[in-house]
Length: 310
Length: 220
Image (cartoon, rainbow over all chains, first blue to last red; front, top):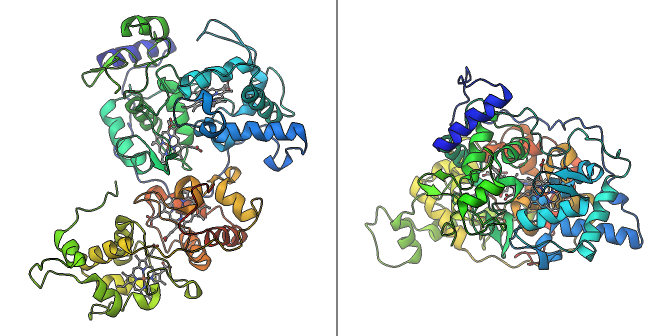
């Protein structure tokens, strides 16, 4: 905990935000959700082709195969997944939804240099990363049928999108999204009980019907691993703010989104596949950022310690 | 949140028909279902069917096999007025707390009447698409993402839609639009109902009403 607070002070120092508590901190308890209003979709400059526009014929078949892998990964890419998640659990509406890292916003911005592995990544390599970390699985070979189908699906969805340009609605809305106060575990727990447990369960392990996720787990052995983007507070807070509670995105306060992101990311999950035997060393090599709680102690538990997960 | 209330022993004992707690406390749920409670609650069977499967012709919902905590919450909501309905409100009000609890347990344990799928609307019909994929441009996820595959229901918070009469499903969506039902957690149903047209409601209700009960394991 201490580490995190200090880390946030540091992060704020860099971005020149003040450490003064915000004048009117959002109540930690669930504020009543504002009166229902018809959804006003965020304005985006790009809309992907309708799913009904997938062409007939062999190209269309591969696009459809890519969509099926994306929306039901455990069934259609079984050999490469290590948990019950599907790509579309984090990239909503089959990868179409703005502000949930949509495929149409991603396809045109690769190849891209990534600090995560210190090299230029092709789009295919980016997809491999999600398999290894978010899906806690293993990377399909670049020329595998699964990879070809996913790339074809993403390419089709980006029909008409510019190359090399970051579109509004691409990625998760992280830019300038900062917590008014450093995120707090106890407040996060309250937000979780009031806004998330309904679906993800009091234990955060989601809800399964006939052995399959209806509501995906947020931590535990069937969740994303410690190397995944969602374990970083800024990614999680931005995703949650824009997309959760499911169908009620953008109703949590910024503070609530950060608090609950921290609460979620302060729970145990499968080990980082790059783990080299020492949590401290693995943190130093791959998690040396205030956005990662890996290797820090929260609630008396060293996160990422090999005994943490059964 | 919305966890089942701690089960009261005597309700369960009365249901199981074993032992006899003090007569004044015992609630005979089966008797109320058949004959009412004599204090204003009419026989449930008259409207919800002998097997609790509902009556499609009269918009009366299926109760058999629904989660006990969900049923209890609905009876409480009718009584408190967060769900208003001219037929059920007086009925729920006429039931004591113990009776509400016993009726909810009773119906949750009634075996589900099997129902084969009736001619399912095509997978690319408007109702099927709304049910399975939703329309995110209007902020509406696929209904099955919360109500489970084929509308089978998920736990205490997300009731099954499969096997409910189409007219009942339509009536609920309209009740949320009009605000006569406003008992949904996080206002999930009020919010998404507001985005639905009359045509959406008709087609999606028809899709769920046509699903088999119990739902096949491979349902979308």
